[in-house]
Image 1 (cartoon, rainbow, N blue to C red):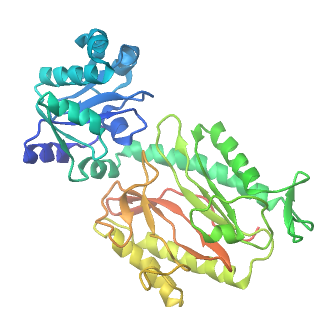
Image 2 (cartoon, one colour; image 1 turned 135 degrees about the horizontal axis):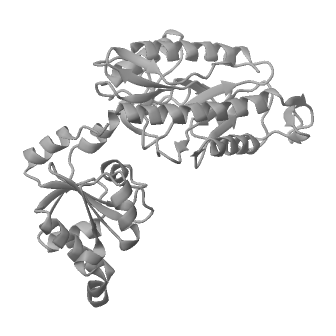
Image 3 (cartoon, rainbow, N blue to C red; image 1 turned 180 degrees about the horizontal axis):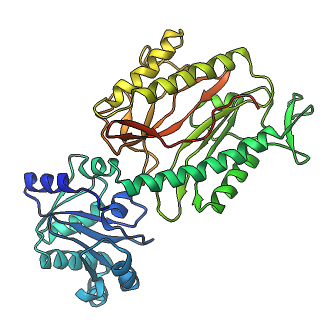
Length: 396
């Protein structure tokens, strides 16, 4: 199913623009979304209400015609790029080619993403192309509402994610509790060696690769490291302390992400960690139950704050300067980017069918550690569906 770009058409018409121009490689999610093409080097896409056109190097021409979601594919060479580059240099040559290509398409004024290259924009303006930075998040708003095919891509990535989480959990569960850590305390040992955050991350990454997914970073954070929501974690994992495992892989085939967090304790959790875990699970369930079309991301965030504040714990809602307790938003959209619209946060807007969001309440204090649980949920026509099947268990 093709994405519904009618709101982009309306935006262009309202602003008196002919098209929407992207100059980037396919690691830029808007480029990937509009072009349907995966290339490691920058290329140019223009979307108009009548067509989508690509301008690529000769190297990518054949593949772009086969794989891209475009009505027209042109080559730089069609506009004598090499001759122009020899005379004027590559940047000026590219500007002249793009301007001529847009002229052939009848495109005089374009909107661009907010992060469109400044040099490219200025050179196009010098050649009488109107270039207007997008003032609204039109394309990112469109990307946020996933098609059924996109939801399946995310679901498949989440299944691979769960396999990786299983591998991490098993490694921690099977580890022995032994004396003799670097600080003299107990540590976990697996395969005759001290079990570290780095070793668990390695197991996660290898498992994901076997399932066609990859990631740049993942979080395996223990104890005081787990009290910082974005600390990746390092060094030995210790028994009786919380271990946050947060995995957010990307499918190598579809480029769509998944996201999930679990908190484990190998051994006996403290009474505080045990209480925090039960509260966080309650907050997770309450937030998921609140998700349906028409509710705002702010209202879902408030549900989580209610649970924690009712238990006497600080949140950023109750104290914007809080450094412990619930110190982040409830969730974010997931798709071609691991963080995208919509937001489950104080300023989160209306949820719509097709929105895929994380729900990830958590509590943090360096004197205690941290607890976070995260599921991935899609908004449906009449409510929601949890795309996560992973069990939730603290004590291993």
